[in-house]
Each structure stands twice: as structure tokens, then as C-alpha cells.
Image 1 (cartoon, helix red, strand yellow):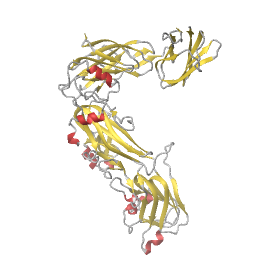
Image 2 (cartoon, rainbow, N blue to C red):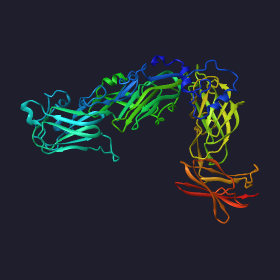
Image 3 (cartoon, rainbow, N blue to C red):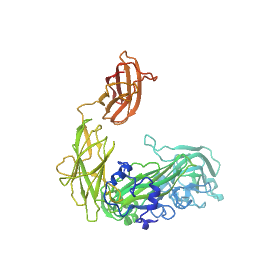
Image 4 (cartoon, helix red, strand yellow):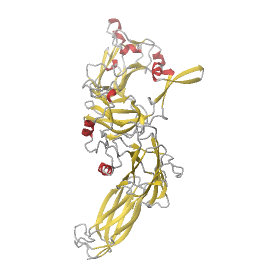
Length: 622
């Protein structure tokens, strides 16, 4: 399949890639288990007439060449046709000459040397032309070779012209330094000395380099005698340590919801590939400008097309990232696919980038192809939602209202289902559509709920759902998706905003008040009296507690003590904010039943801000 085939429906591919899907619904809904989705779909009366509505766009592979759909930097897709991998350097290749993937240059930071001209002769492949230091030389004068990319280097060679009259022009004293041009923790570029020679007698200088990645090489003169360099040679072998593939903006032909991103990576131990994505509303993530200078000190910018921009010189053009129409690059995806696309949707345009890295000359990573799952047109142009109230007391059961409204254009399908992520299990209340109570089917789990209701097909409809839930962490987000249970179109992400003037929050995140700074709350034991005699009735007690306001997991200790202070039993856990219970079966750490009596339980949370402990009692009776 190529770019022109991306509209094809691919039932066979979907079955192969998503064996856990139900009726063609892609497994990209991170908030709801698919067995719950299937159970909910069974509640629906109608049966979809087209089961496989997703479309797929493929980049890479033998049928959709990487080169035709993106920009390769230090990458090669010809060694194994259709497969993308870093360039492999071979020993007989002179890296100073550049190649189809990179451009090299010879330059100097010193104006006196720049004014001489001829620096390019050092890398033109002609040993009969040379850069000549004709002026009275200054100790410390230097020339630099930029290889155009960080490459594996094992040998550096430079020499003067071979004719007899030029043989005494070689560099009599020098220092050669190398750098991969990556900044140190202090922000400075570090240079390492490859060789220093105060008494050179060779017209051809060869310097071995042991196992180094190099971007730039600097030759510094340590003599006042005139000198020249006719040719510069750099050799090495192995794979480039960093490379990038950036796709062209992919046009889905209209607004589209995004599903799974799938790619497979084969890699050696020291190699890796990072995937990032972004999405947009127009065909370029950048805005392009021509610079003009109508008078000294004044620079005007005129917006131009990308084609015009690329014809301009570097001093006459400017590009800016289009933050109004494009999202920024996403956080990195998992090491390999498939994974749900996290860039905003629905959007018409989509772009991805693969970043190859390797810490060893011999190690590489290979990517065969990238598959993007999408459906178009979207369910709605956008679906706006807010949750109210947006400030609550931590750990207190609160009644929330989830309000949403769609922007629906002619041709948009609409939706009849809503999935919302929750910090813990919610109790659902009334559902209203345009103010009218509406029956619904529901599935509730500890981390989300899903409801199916009468289809919403018209622009501006107001859907309101009340539910009770606890919030334990400041900034908890009730993110959501809508979908059509009667089709296999992909779910659509909800965006926060002003869904209704009746609710002032305009957001999906909820804060917690600082009435208390406690991390541990609602600590008790149930039942408070239990009989571990094996009769199956109250054989255990559950020590229950609530953790709140934790930004990262904390170490929890639950300990049982006799009234004498002796420790009977202990358990240690790593836990985040949430509601928990830990059972005690009435036995000590050696498995012996505790005698009848009163025992003290203690729960301690070890956090970055200190330790917090709550205690209580429980009674063992026989």
C-alpha cells in the first residue's frame, strides 16, 4: 500500500495486529477495558453494517519508500530495501568529502585565515590544489573540518601537495583536537587532543583515533613557518551514533481521529529508536518568511510559501514554529508499537519523527515501516467538556457533574457513548441530554466508567452526567472520550472548555483544598473484632486506609503489636494515592495464631516531607 492507497479498509491487517479487538474496534481506548466495551456493545440493539471502518497510512516498507514520504538524516533505506537504518561507514570511504546524506565544510574562526580563501581546497579531492598559509604564520592559527554529522572515526590524515616544489610546505608543528560537538553539563563544547607534534618531519601526517565518535576536527599550527594542506582524509567504520527520520506532514484529506501507531524495531544492545509525533490543522508546522531590509537597521518579514523560502539564502529567510495550528512534539512513545497516538485529535495533518541513537560503532537499530490508524470524518469537529466542582476537599466523596457539548457539522456522525477516567470507582447518577433525563447503560471499573445513551447527532447538544467520586491528588484530570457504539470508528478525545454557562469551571482537572496536610486518612480495621478459627466467618480483618496528596509512590508499613509492645506482624508496600486495605489473618510472622486479646495496628507512610502514622486497635476472639 502506498500514499494513494491509504483509504483502503484493512480487515486482515486489523485482525492480525489487534487480536483482542471486538467487532473491529481498535484497542486504543486506554481508559476502558475491551471486555467492558464488548459487554456494553451487547446492550445495543442495532448491529453495525460495516465492521472495519479504520483506515491505515503506511510509511516505509518496499511499497511505500521512506525517501518519498520524509527526510532522512544520516539514514539509509537502500541496504535492505524498505528498511530504515543508520548509515554504515566503511574504511575506504573518505568522510571528509561528504556524501548524499551530509555536507562537509572546511572553515576557520579567524578572519585573517578566512580572508586568504581556498579553505575548500582541503576537501575537494584534488591533491594538486591546496589551502596555503602564505602570510607570516602565527602560532595558534587553526582550520576546522566539519564532517556534517557525528561519525565513527579511526584515522585522520592530512598532507601537502605532492610535487617536489611543495614538499617543504608541510606543517612542521601542530596539535589536532577532535569533538563530537555535544555540550558538557556546563554547556561548553569539549575538545580532546588526538595528537601533538612539535617536530614533524613527514609531509603526510596520519593520526590513529581509538574508538571515537567525531563531528569536528581542528588542526592548530604550532609553528611560525608557512604551511599548506592539500587534502584532508578522515576514515572510520561502523554506524552513525545518531540519525533522524522526519515524515512530511501527512494529509488525511479532512479532520480525522487517531488510533494506534504501530512500528517494529530490531536493535542491537547499545542502539535505540525513539518515536515522537505531532498533529496540525494545516500542511506545515512552520510559517515561512522572506526578510527584507528597506533601510539600515530595519528588517521586515513577508510571509511566503515553503517553496519560495527554500530558494532564498540563509540571511534572507526566517521560519517560525506555528504554535497556533500545530501541537509540539509529544513525549517519547514506548520502545516499540503498537501504542495509542497521544497527539491532539481530530486533526487533518499528522507528522512523526524517529530518532536513532547508538553508543557503539557496531550497534544499529532497524525500522521496517510505520502504520498510522485513523478514521475520517470525525464524530464531531470537537467535543468540549468540563467537570464541576473543580475544587474539593481531599478524600471526601463529592458529587460531580460532567458536562459536554459537541460542535457537529453536516456529515459528522455524532456519538452515543462516553468514557471518563476516574481516580477510583465512581457511583453514577442522573444523565440528562438537553435537560431531559435519559436512560443509559453503564459499566464502572476502579479507574473509569462508560455510559451508552441515546445518540447525539446535533450541534450544541448538552450532555450532563452526575456521579460521586473521591479526589486524592491535586490536579486530578477526568479525561474522556466519546465514541459511536454502532460503528467501528475510532473514539474521539474530549477537550476541556466551556461546555455550559451553568458550570463555571471550564476545565477537566480538579484541585483539592489545603484544609489538612495529612497524607493518611480514614484509617480503621474492619471487622474490629474477628475470630481466626477457620470457620469461614470473620476469619480475617482488613486494615483500611486512604493515601492522598502523594505526587509519587511512598513506602507504607503496616504493623501489628501486642499491648506489651512486642511486634507480631509487619508488611511493607510501595503505594500511590488511593484507597487500600491490607488483610491480617490473626497470625504472627512465624505463622502462629495470636492468643485472644486486644492488639494495636499502626500504619506509617514514609514520604519526602516526613513520616505520618495512624494507629488503632483490633480484637482477636475465639
